[in-house]
Image (cartoon, rainbow, N blue to C red):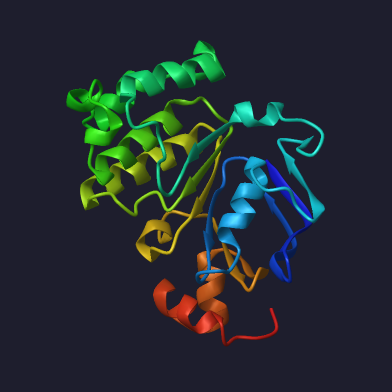
Length: 237
């Protein structure tokens, strides 16, 4: 579903990401982790076409994204900080998404409105909503898109524990339908027990790519938190 080859981006004198070659298959849940400044956001924005790589290539569903923008119709995106027009309502945003993607690509939105308890907020302006409710609106719009790839940037950062659990259930639901889900996060419980594979970025390079069980084996740790903490000091893989 997603393949990168020698993906690199340089800002002035610093490489944000360098020579990232990865492949994510259909129906996989991928966790992207790493310390601040490790390149997670640059990597995600490169896939979304929001950042132009210095060199390297990206394919989404077999399409070289440097040669086409149509691949974006198969992506649902949930940003870390939703930046919606403040005077619009969630209902307005839904109409906008339906206009952009087409009615045939926007499905189950009534299900997600109910699931995320958004009924009472649908006709309120975004500026009147709390941070957590804005994040719910972002999730509702993202998952209402019938996509092959979902990219979630810190999806549980502003959510309460109950809504975070709902979000995880919906991620698994998308996987069951064959979609690939990429989750970028600092929050270990967000990925533990959920992801099929984990990418750990350090100083713009891939330090680790594989299953959580493999990471625990390499670092000789029983918990994912301790395995990640030790990862920076393990060489040779």
